[in-house]
Amino acid sequence: MPKYVIERELPGAGKLSGEQLKVLSQASCNVLNNMGPQIQWIQSYVTADKIYCIYIAPNEEMIREHAKQGGFPANSISEVSTVIDPVTAG
Image (cartoon, rainbow, N blue to C red):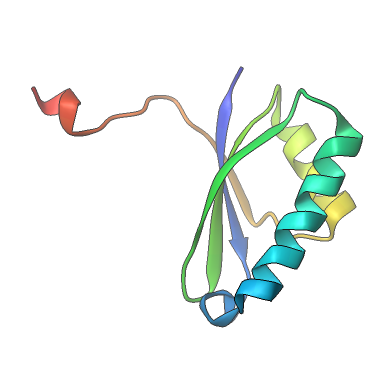
């Protein structure tokens, strides 16, 4: 199943409180539960003004539908072609 990186522009994301991040996470999980097991949220990285999310889904359209249902931005969706790490250097 393809893996995607989603860039969500959210001004002030890095200043969100733990409680605000919890509410966002719960909203995302609720939508995912309704959409079924084909789409999975792996992890997200919060920066000053953006959140970068890693998802597994059968296609980009499903990622966009998740964003639409959850009311989240999905400014950029990129399919991951390869994963590298320090072991790749060896």
